[in-house]
Length: 308
Image (cartoon, rainbow, N blue to C red; front, top):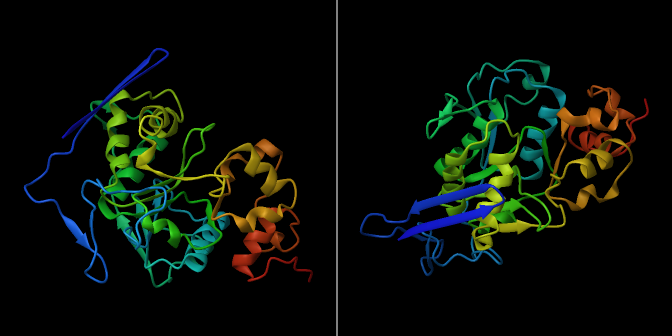
């Protein structure tokens, strides 16, 4: 079966083609009690609203580090939050330079489920040369999920609670009708249909636009056309919206953070709310805004202020 999507919006025309033809036999995955089979090659029986009765996504968390051998405090807290609060079977760090260093790397490098996976970053796709490193990152995170399946997290995403409920779905993204999708947290089966179509959108690559291929184009060309391909996480419970999260984390105490599944720290954008403080294990003891409570919960095991 050949799927063709043509979208015309303003001056942009997107023509996506994906060939669903495969070998003679469709691979069926037999789950747990050998009484139920599901089509996990084509997902013709997929229900991304209520999900499958049993998990179909491997319990693996993926991080991607390109030209980032140094671990800072925020990245250590984020990775350790995934380890403690989700308890994955494996944590894979995909890295082009895996010679990590810094005292915060030393604090987590011996986690038993942690593995390093070396890769060579792509320089382009479909004849286009990437103009920015993060555009390559947009592609690589999809390719990681297409190879392994699991949970992709940006390096400054804090995991608040277990993500196990989302392992029952073909593809999970933070998306609400008024927004473009949030790509900082992605959960997927390796054969998720969305991932294959996402990669095809790079045929229309715009190197001068920061989030066009990472979020804008996939929203218009795939999700608006085929919303059934993803499970939506609404009410901002992956915490990947921009200015709202910055204000909640760094300008006040937001008690609602504990209701989220994840929260994006947005550590590269804190100057937008006037924050110049560089966090460490000492100054978080008395930092009264939300970030302080979150970091303390991982580093010290308490959300409360620590008054020496």
